[in-house]
Image (cartoon, rainbow, N blue to C red; front, side, top):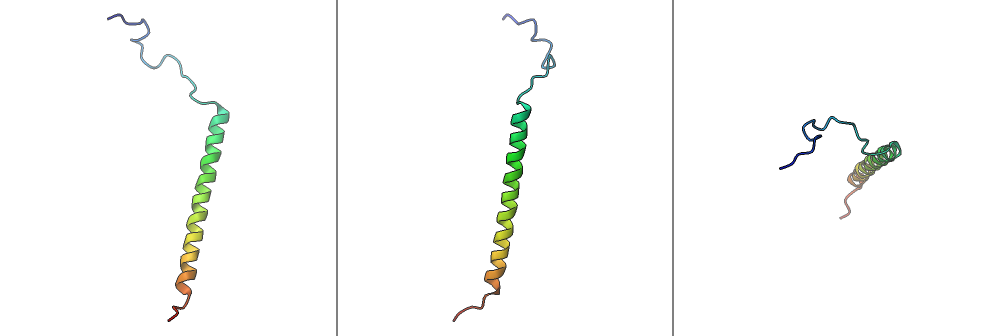
Length: 59
């Protein structure tokens, strides 16, 4: 088995940037918008449950 001369050094040769700064910023903004929309959905659901619970039962 022939090994490359670099294989013994490990993964610390150079730090490769996985994603660009623009992509990272876009991902962070997307996660922020998603978390805000989930918060809004939970709030609207809780308020609608309170409204339904306050309604008199027809019968």
